[in-house]
Length: 342
Ligand SMILES: C=C1C[C@]23C[C@@]1(O)CC[C@H]2[C@@]12CCC[C@@](C)(C(=O)O1)[C@H]2[C@@H]3C(=O)O
Ligand SMILES: O=C(O)CCC(=O)C(=O)O
Ligand SMILES: [Fe+2]
Image (cartoon, rainbow, N blue to C red; front, side, top):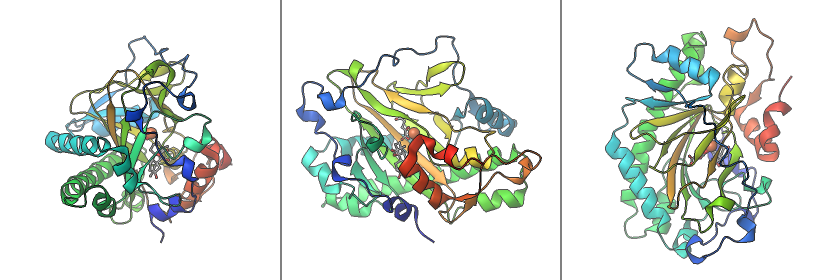
């Protein structure tokens, strides 16, 4: 079976699609980073905000199912991830992105690689660059940590590995609740949600201080490829999700709560009952913003098709392996779901 890293490596990017700008060295926004941002301030003002679910609530499963169906995203509280750990991961991410540009480039993701420092994978689909730098981790980040901190790589690794372990447990708990709410049998759930073979990735995102935030974008609109993504955002605003009939809705950070969003693979598995949510990051504040996104998916050789609880409905998608879907998405981005539609 191939790893998630190999599945991404099969779709190499060009070198100019990897190297982030040296954000500290620019005083004005380069033309390469200027976007049409006319709709960025058009946030819905109808006081609609995404649902929050307390994981200790006996009705959590039902509430999460409803949130996935109506919003494709929710915030979760009482999730059992220690707040100290969230603080430590954020501070390690800050330490990484504060390194001089030349040092960060030592851990640059290779054109055929999936992990390390670089710009967002979706960048080649846009003719302008995003005001963003990222660092992708799949399992142990030791190789890259040694490139960044040859004398002390362990501290970074320990925190990132601990965080990924805790995130995997939370992702599995959430997936059980989500699939139960679809009336899927225990047996079927256990096939999708397996701790051993899961494909997971941790993405550290930094949106540096921007000299002209009103003309830049942090992360262009996209859906995640995963089953689900668990996001911790620092105290800065910027994340917006798109809700049909409402428009762009700001997801303000709430201390200690995590944002969970439906990705394309859950969209397929649920036969579009839980649609993957379109989201983006706009430049709202005059300070650096950080986020940590944990992506949870089944093993790369797992074939996804709409699950049996939906057998009364016509399946909307053909069966596709995680690996093949990653390939389709790498070539077609937002058209990927429509390309596997029956
Ligand atoms: C597992 C992954 C999902 C991701 C591509 C990646 O290999 C690691 C980075 C992830 C990310 C983060 C920013 C947005 C996104 C669309 C991108 O360009 O890189 C996601 C990718 C994804 O969900 O497809
Ligand atoms: O920074 C954020 O709030 C969102 C990040 C994101 O969408 C991603 O990493 O896929
Ligand atoms: Fe995302």
